[in-house]
Length: 265
Image (cartoon, rainbow, N blue to C red; front, side):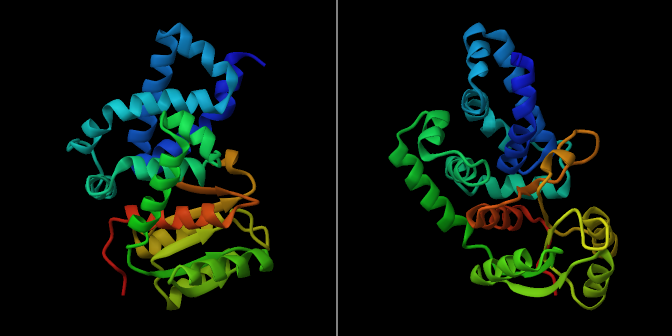
């Protein structure tokens, strides 16, 4: 496999990580582009990318760590959602969130995360614990679960409830999701893509957004690459099946952390 193919294989997941870290698809993609440009300009960095994900994320970290304060100060061209996300980022130590995302959303070991961040493994573990404490301060909300596998739906219900959130409804089809939102107003949606009757979780989410406006959404799917093509606006929060509960927990905290809307009645 060529170097270009290896990088391309990992690029969708680096873009997912960058969006979750910055709270913005545009900002995250800008950092990814800057990373690739820096790698091409430095022969040693370019050669290191042949070793897979860790050096790619390490190269990204060097670019992001040297420039994230400039992102915090950005005022022009932001949506309301992105502006709110950056405002919250200024109140939370970015490296805590980075350690948490690397070890949960991206599935790196503490050792690999330490290599990426260029810090001792013990520091990574401490940053993760601090991040969990910070993001768990967010207020509870009402959650709609769109999932056609009963066992997975029940697992998600238990997880959501353990985090202190309410379940406003569950749905296995697009029609059932429409019925739930006709009577309830979720503050967060967890959605599979392929539903029981052949309907689409994407369409179900579109229905919700049209009816309610802004609401954070986390897609949970066995085929994340179908949404990470760059051909259309991509979800910021995307969890791959089979998932670890810690990954979903982190995604929920991230989604609520970046939610710019007022609490829904």
